Length: 132
Image 1 (cartoon, helix red, strand yellow):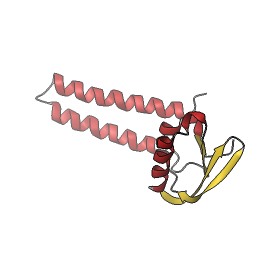
Image 2: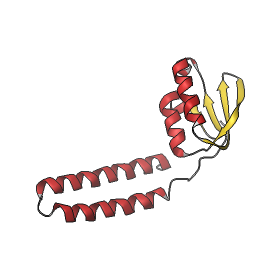
Image 3: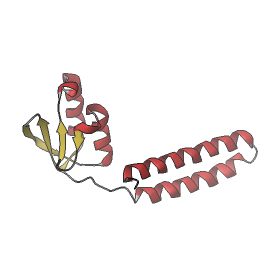
């Protein structure tokens, strides 16, 4: 059974293919390209809007970050701090280091985009939003 992540990846691939079709059409048919491009872009926009309704609007909190040997450099931790500070909200943030847990003195506005940014810095397995 495909996971939600697999389904979203398939949707993203479909939209990428649709955008490639637009580019190809513009190259192959420059005189009628604008009209067809507008039609294809509107269709892609409708599909993207529909897919967005399938994505949870907010991950389940609290936000948890695992700090380990590979992601604890000062530069990485400073980047994480800056990202967290620019997303103030009401979701608590907990740092995990081995068996130690520490709640940060502020909370964030938890969004899928925030989780993805943190995962890009710390690693996918180091950021989660539910109990493990």
